[in-house]
Image (cartoon, rainbow, N blue to C red; front, side):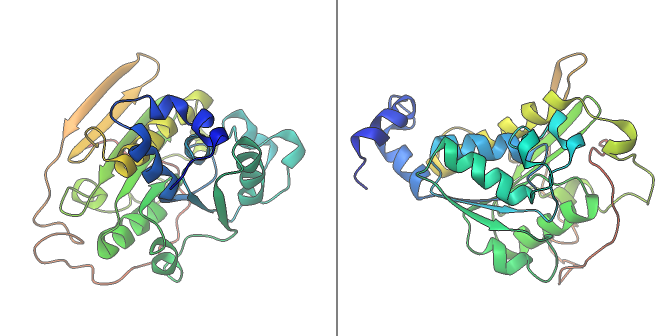
Length: 269
């Protein structure tokens, strides 16, 4: 593709990078990334993907902007309270970078629409706050052979891993959703707003690294951190041959919907 003079200036700091350059920026501009959830994690992800010039960015979220969201969901603002999050996010992204095409889905990510939506994208980012939806994202991406980034936050903690076909998936590590009420929600336990920014930015970086083919992704590794101590830890993972979705004899042959509104971080057992 031929960059305009304005685009060369806009993306100049990427183009100057030896590991990105013009070709890498072209891959970014042609890339398609789906972000599931336009909340705490989705906000920084969407801002950085738009700023980077990702050609097509999909957003799926069924909620509207609420005042309590604004402490961490930085893509939204006071004037957009009551607006569907996908439209609020699109408005902000279009102001930031009119180059990008923002596709909105004002609906929940479900068994019924999962495959139809993810098939259009190169990379998927999990920015949700529900364990059942996280497992649904994982299972759909594994079955469709779609790379994705998992992310979870609660209180002062964050965790993330990246899946590529053949590597450890989310279910390889966490076999299924925890029992109802076993883990508090963000509304019950709280979350430091900046934690969402820290983790979402890492997820955005993983997407850009994937599109450009630069660096090492967080595959077969679980990155965790605690912002109170600023301790970061990387746990090595292995593809689980007995994984019910990506193992040698998968027990999960189709997507399953589960009803459970639970927020994020599950400690590694």
